[in-house]
Length: 548
Image 1 (tube, rainbow, N blue to C red):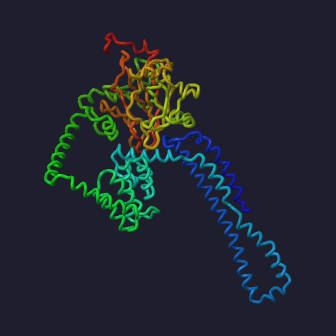
Image 2 (image 1 turned 90 degrees about the vertical axis):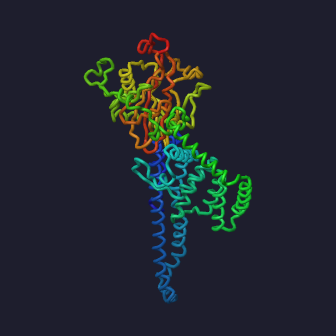
Image 3 (image 1 turned 120 degrees about the vertical axis):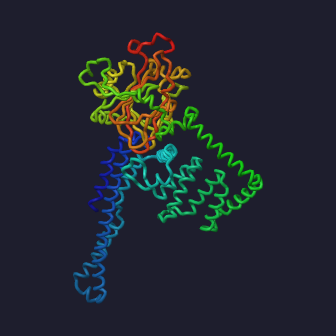
């Protein structure tokens, strides 16, 4: 037996402990922090694979030495067989070789050095990402492409803003991404990524995917979007490469028939041109009007614009009323000698940022505590009042209390000292790590009037305010935006932002509707504290006017 075989089997045991921590959770794509575990798992697999290769090479080397030795021996022996066997030692050794040594060689050839590697791979595969993870990561790429208006080639070449580790997507990668979009009946993205796959094939990139397959999907995706001319052109190109392609033959006839039918139904060219000119004029007018009336743009568009850094509605006059200061919260003894740095981020709603408010050591400790507890982030279902996962929130979160570590109590006290609000009725500290294209689409933190049971089971009233720690810098994307007011707040490591969700009279401030933009490049860690109404009666009393 080869000595490395036992080593290979040991790998299975060594890797099990690392796998236990990630096997309890799925939805890997929703947390970059937990996806890092998969990198180490893959690295261990590569090491195991190399051990297997060395074992195979060692076995083949032994067989080669045996073959070389016998090759020279039999070549000499067959020159004079009787003379060779006339020596009694040669006769004995021939009997021994054929009776024993060839049997040993047979055992060596039949020995399977892959046992350790295969066992290791089988165990680890139970904890690999699933089809849902691959689909989730693919959808995240498409979401990033739409939100940040990136063309397929930019993503394929890895040339993203702020990216350090750039990597090129192969034809196979582009094809698989297009296939996932196709499965989701998303023909727009199918076209984009099949076109990119075709482009890279035309540039000479080697791939197991051929042009015929790509053109087949591409022509159909384009047809589904109503572009018969282009679909027909691509089908003809496909048939040039494979004249016997049965589906393409049928499509060619169908597209030609549909195109002829369409042409007969069209009005004369002059009328058509007039309509096109009119439409273009109308589009330009609409674009001009949309720039002037930001408030009339659909929320989704406003959200994406703000994520790209467009549409921020801070005038110079309003900007001049935003200040930065040293803050001690009405001479709080803890901040008299060392006041904190506070700056205004927005005026309506009033959003403030505290700088250098949490240290690197504290942030790392919070991440360390949260990582093994991370689960797919949930939202309050307004119908049931219970927590549930949602496609519009792509992240993993964990809840930490003062019982988990004294640091959490220390952070809670710091928030109380700076806001002046009671923390005993606040929710636990929530730590969130965003995954591939991680986001949280526009939402309110507080419960609206049509959600009377949103926080009923907590018994602490509505969410009066939000405190949000940023525990990492984000290379690109990941801003917190307020679509209704055109505000955007960039993540900055070691800072925290704070705003009130309710007016002093307890009514919800609808201008606080906000969203977490998709993370384009980087790893976004945040932790937030939702502060509730109960206990704030004397800390933030109602105003004399009922309307305030």
